[in-house]
Amino acid sequence: MKLLVIDTCDVLMKRKSDGHVFITAEAQLTSISQTLGINEKIYGGIGNKPLAIMKGQKEVTSALRNAFYDQEFLSLTQGVAIKEDDTVTIHKTEKDLVVTDNAGALEVSITGAPSGTTAYVRNTKGEVETATIATNKVTVPDGHAIAGERVSVTYEVQATGNVVELDGEKFAEAYTLEYVTQAYDPATNKVVKDIHIQLDHVIPIDEFELSLENGTAIAPEVNFECLTAPNSTSIGRIIEVDRV
Image (cartoon, rainbow, N blue to C red):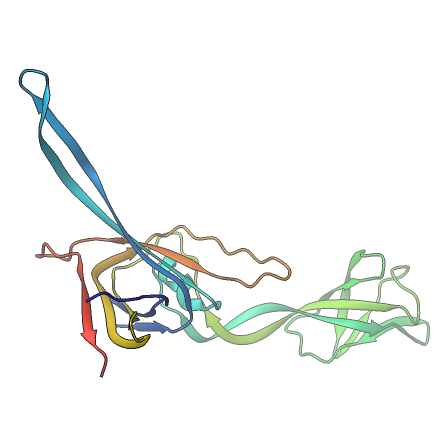
C-alpha cells in the first residue's frame, strides 16, 4: 500500500543495564541511515568483466534531535544516571542592588541565604571585587562604588537539583530504541497506519555539543550506532500496524 509520511516520530528508549525508560514526544528530527563498508565489484576474465559484487560491513546509524532541552539527552551521552534531588553548591547572583551608607560603611542588602562569608560585587563599570557577607548584608569595598549606585552581588548557596555528572571514566551505555510515526492514505488523507522502527542494540555516540546562543533555542541532538544484539543477526525492524 502506498503511504504518505510527513511527521517526525515519538521516541521510546530503554537503558539495558537497569531498564530506565526515556520517552519524548517533542522530537524535531528522527532519522535512520544505512551504509556498507564493503560494496565492491569483482572483475575478471577477458576484458576484465564485472562478475560479482562483494558486500559486507553493514552499518546502521540513527539521529535524534529534540525541540526541548532535557537532561536525559546529556545522560545518554555520559553513561550515567541522573542524580535526582542532589545537594549541590552553586553561585547565585542578585542584581539591581542599591548601595547604602550605614554610618560611613557602604553596604547592600541581599535576600538569599549564602553558604559562606565571601561575595563578589560588580559595579556599573563591570569591575568585580571580593566582599564580606555578614547575615544578609554585604560590605562594599572602599572605592568600588558610591552610595546610590546599583550593583550586583554573587555568592555561594546550597541548593537541591538534578545532576548529570561529566565523569571522565564513564561512557554511553547500550539502549533499545523505538521510533513511532503515522502514515496517511494519499487518496483520503486519513491516518491508516502506525509505523514502528525498532532498533535492538544502540549506543549513543559520546560526542555532543551544548551551544547556548542568545535568541536561539537549544535543540539537543544525539547520534547512535546501531549494532546487532548479542546472539542475534538482527539490527532491528520496520513495522506497519493498522491504525484502529
